[in-house]
Image 1 (cartoon, helix red, strand yellow):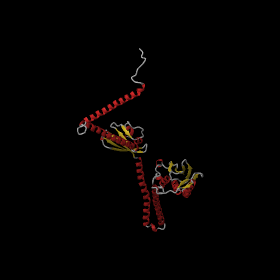
Image 2 (spheres, one colour):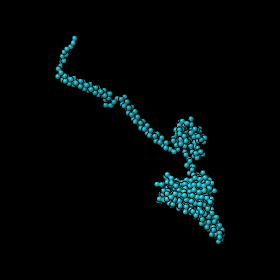
Image 3 (tube, helix red, strand yellow):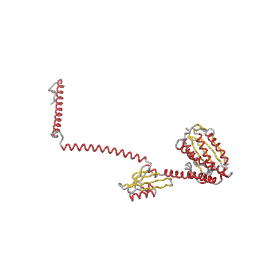
Image 4 (spheres, one colour):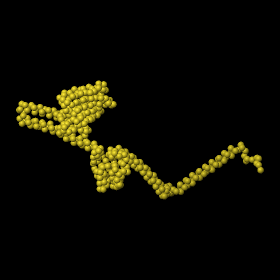
Amino acid sequence: MVITNLQLPFTMTQLPVYLAILFFLLAAWFAWQYYDLKKRIDDYTKQIRDTDGSFPADVRKIENLSNAIASFKKTFDLRLSTLKSQNERLATVLEQLTDGVIIVDANGLIQFANPASQRLFETSSALGRSVTEVLRNHQLVEAWRRCQQTGEMQSESVELPARRQFLQVIAIPDTHASGSLLLVQDLTRVRRLETVRRDFISNISHELRTPLASLKALTETLQGGALSDPEAGPRFLGRIHAEVDALTQMAQELLDLSRIESGQVELILTPLEPRKLLNSAADRMKLQAERAGLNLHVHCADDLQSVRVDKARLEQVLVNLIHNAVKFTKPGGEITLEAESTSGGVLFAVRDSGVGIPSESLSRIFERFYRVDRSRTGSGTGLGLSISRHIVEAHGGRIWANSREGEGSVFYFEIPIV
């Protein structure tokens, strides 16, 4: 059967009215469901309260437990953040520390090594390696073993001749992990300063003892009757005068050195041609060189760029270097003053054909009162080279020497162009 005609209970014009009624009924039903649910929740809340308006004991315990857990979590997070910050700060300190820090377990395997310790023992990776393999010195290893056996702190200092280095290792027992902590200190500079101080005291004592003993002997001779001798009296008085002048010069040079080192000397910088500086110093020392039977020459191009220097101070450096060359060059020898341009300034040189300097002494000849050996002793205070070094460094330059025994020496200093 085929339906050919469908009769609706309403006409098309009545459809919007019926849809509006349907929407209203659905909205009313959802509203009733919401208010019914809210009423049941409120009733449930009232049921679980006590008569005084508080929650039952079990509910309060759960609430207190929840608050305690939240407080504990907050405290834990704060402590964790503080611990992380402290660990980062400690890691930074250990990385920047100049002393080595090594943690060794009970089996002798390294669990931690800061960068300084790896530099001191010249290794790129120490973790997981044995302490014997890293330290590579039986005295240091024995100190660690004594610490492990006795449970007491041990200390050992050694010299590494191949590197000219002094190291001190302090082994501290770790009572918690049965291992040990090794602190490694580089004492090379401290030992070098101790040597300089010891030599300085010895040298200044020697420098003062010689003229003082001479003065004492001369005065005793004069008191013994030589003062009335028309020939010996004036001669002894002249020697006393020379020794007093030597002591005065030493005191003045010590004062100058102290003032230069403390920065109390102000440099008066003016443009100066290198050739004029060399000629001025050569003119001052020409007569002394001729008396010693030496030839003094100046080799310098006329077109070298001028440098800003304190003429008096830098001329003092050249005079000191020429004076040393005169003292340690045999008659008939040559002394040459030179200057040439470099990439950053002007290089000055004082070259001689003298007795030379041993290689082991080249690094110390600019120390106060330092004497290479007895064969090079002579007149002077032993302060000239030290003063020269400070003057050159005050100009922003550097000074050094090259020499071989029996083949002469060359003293260089470079002044930058600013």
